[in-house]
Image (cartoon, rainbow over all chains, first blue to last red; front, side, top):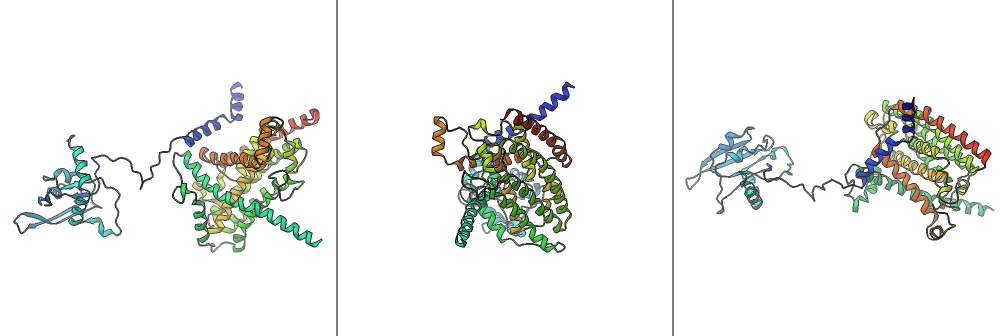
Length: 163
Length: 339
């Protein structure tokens, strides 16, 4: 009987409701955790595996020697490479394509590469306007490497001490 | 004679414009405030792209709604379908006619103001029923039926709260009710009528079909209830009516229980005199009612939706008995102690 009246008394004081309201009030005046995306970004790891890039040596010569190790190790078979002899006698790729829809961003290509040519940048916000452009060609990969050269170098440098 | 008549009409028209235009603006910005407040309670930021701090968002929304296509379902009853939004918004604007903003400014000082308000707030449910029925869709019909049942059951509890107020003030005119509460915060009716105030406020939330009593709209169950098939400006009219009703019941709550335009400190002492001289009475009305409007949004961010049978149980088995008991107690005190 006493418990019954106690329960009724508690219900009539609306204590539970006030408790709930206090919780939302605390959040109302509390810190907001929204990140305004295009202006702000969350910090990214140096090991972030995003969009791919092909790198060059300091003198502008492309690093890729067409060994096809990345093509072989790629678990999703996203990389297609064709090679040929260049005028100076060295072996170079004439076709280096990555299908970004197939790619699972595992980073094996980067690990397999003996000359540190193919790398993964920390770019994650890219898009295509038609389905065909999901395959990025050698020119585009090299262009990405040229454009973000400093960033990529810094990123790899930071991470190298842990390897 | 005729000139006087037309002058009177003209004067009333101006008063209507002076009330309705700010009302519409505040409704627009209430939608903004709702999104902001709920976002803040979710630890988010809310709309902030259109204008500084998203302040132009309601205007963008209004323009979007104005330019949207007006869809009429093939199997609906066209005339009722089109008339329903008007029936909803009409009474919710008409009810503002009797609200006193200060001692002199009101469109009409009706001596049965409280009854008028009760009837106007219940009239808008007809619009909802018509909308749900004329749409000829099962979700709309379900929403309309729920709305009818809910509004009718909570109207009774609300009416009893009005009875308590009018027993203490001995008048139905809203102006008289406010004047009966003159004095400081302790003379306002919330103190003697505290249970009635709480019940009035919960019923008001239920009357306006707001969360946690929003089974009428019930997004997760019946999509949007009675206005599923409405689009464009007709949908906006339903929205406008809902929000202007929210403001109306908040203002009404302030008028009945929190001394309307009165300042909380009676002007017998120095501070009261100071406030009385430097703050217009309408400031207090808006200030006090904005707290209640805020609590609408606060409730929506806090409480989960009531189950339908729980709503009915709360209305019929808890609120009506409590209000009746408290009315009897108040009647006893009024009769024998002359408070």
